[in-house]
Image 1 (cartoon, rainbow, N blue to C red):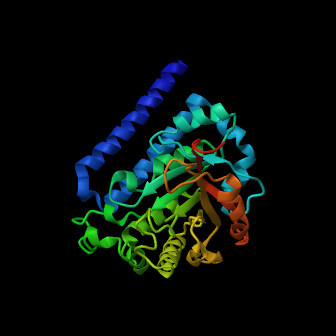
Image 2 (spheres, one colour):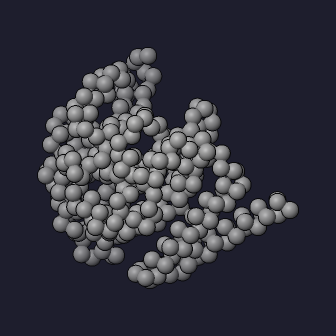
Image 3 (tube, helix red, strand yellow):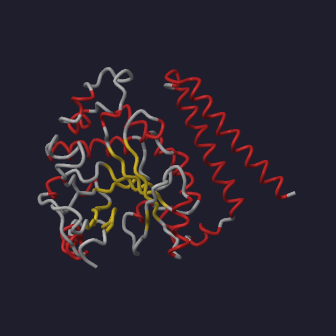
Length: 321
């Protein structure tokens, strides 16, 4: 009897998901405005149903293991001043699936309170507010860390004739964000984050001081443009009531002058950086110890008075131990 009940629940969840996807496909660009909002609410309902179903099928074991973390999930202000080290990870299958991360936890014998995901700006479905992923993470008892990347060229010109051509968007892109040119996207995320209600650590425009890797870097923008864009986005979220969002400022500390990009204590909740060692794999690289790529830079970050996150960590085995 229980097996039949589980099968019925699974089929119901599948039917809801298929119905939502079909509606989105049929409506296409016509799904703007109130219809989009209705479908988004339906998507959130599907996500909550799927989470409930998963808990019934698997049991609440993982969330019980994170019972000590519950006060942080209930009070974002407490998450902004944790009293313990919080471990987390990213897996390449996220946000499509959390199975790989759960397998990693089983291998490590650790239940992770933080789950990391990378999401880009744009018009594509995978660039919208991730209702299902965030709801699934909450059902597991964890908090998401969202690295939110402002790839401005991902917005369709035909849908946004007010924007410059794609080839012109990166130059001064952060100033455009600060002016409000992308508020149609920022505000939608802000409203949906507020409706989500649960804590989100949002790592916006990371490594903004790296002049090589990302278009929102100093090759296209001045530090004061970054600061203006950061504060504008934070204020738009706050105006929407998204007080559950904690802001993670994440420069690349291997480059000097990263402090010029600091938006100020009132607009930052966490500070973060990466600790990546490429060894001697390339001519431009050498072996770095962890103390060199992070330890020596810890004190300046800690001096800001915010919790410090190692948002990315990795090391090759070529050239050292």
